[in-house]
Image 1: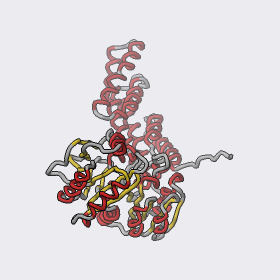
Image 2 (image 1 turned 60 degrees about the vertical axis):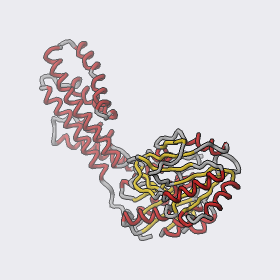
Image 3 (image 1 turned 120 degrees about the vertical axis):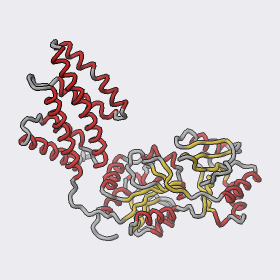
Image 4 (image 1 turned 180 degrees about the vertical axis):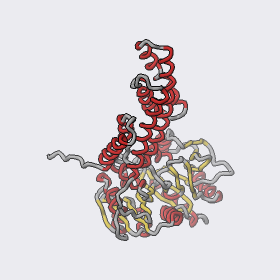
Length: 441
């Protein structure tokens, strides 16, 4: 098997350009020491602009702290400490308060750079030059490197971008690989497209609590459509931007059916940006496993007891034998609230022969959430990706719809095209091809 050499990427090219510009600036500022500006430019260069801005802020903080501290320490040593060995001890011990200060001001990632600028000011000081001049030169050189990195990384070649398109991808078995993770390749390219103005969201039946650790490396600019459309959750702010709960009389009627059957159900309600799940005594091992698998998840709180009077449920979940859930479903659908709810049944991950029955408001659907997002963004088109048959209504809405190779047959039949499986990052590749395409969909 031949070794495939990696391509020379834009980050490499931009880093070289930034270093060259820093070196050119020495013709304008002959008093500068280009090693500081060039090293800063290399450290600040990131794969996408949003990261570069974050790094730049930390570098500026580190530059100011390190430069000012270096100036004061240099003045002290020149006036009162003529012995080199004692100077070395003082400079070394200063590392402790410098790092501590960055922790206190919540800029811990700036600690290393603070120390570098401090050492450059105190150790590489030119004899006979005033400490304030040395410190100011070091800070200016460093700030030049930061500015150059920001400008160079913000530069884009004139490539067309479809900013009037809303890209929607199912999470499980579509964007996620079989190991339940998003590849570093996908994270890089999605973040780059978002940085270039792409509108991108995810749709899933998961609760927001399980999404945060999976999506923590994505710089999503839109909320995630979670719980099959019942909520829109902003992963960046850790907040619920929208929800469609059931009317209280509807959820009470549903809970009444479970009580008559002598069965437990999990009632989900959003209280103070936290999902609270109310439940009673477990009736089978599957729901007990379900509870223990999810109860330690952050941003979620399990409560033994009933839903408080003033709260509304966004979802009611039942984990039971398939025959039991089917019977309960028929009883619920026979009530006069049957047309006001949506019921979705899926196989349980916790026990063979059991199903998970999720009950939502009839208006809380994936397609309604996408239409709302489309209206809010004022975009013209929708491009969808998926694997589950639950996405058939979304595919019918979309201008183009792509089913992954491992998708359900019903979804493939509704798709514009079938692409490779979820382990090949086919979704991201097709998304990139569509987003940077000049022609209309």
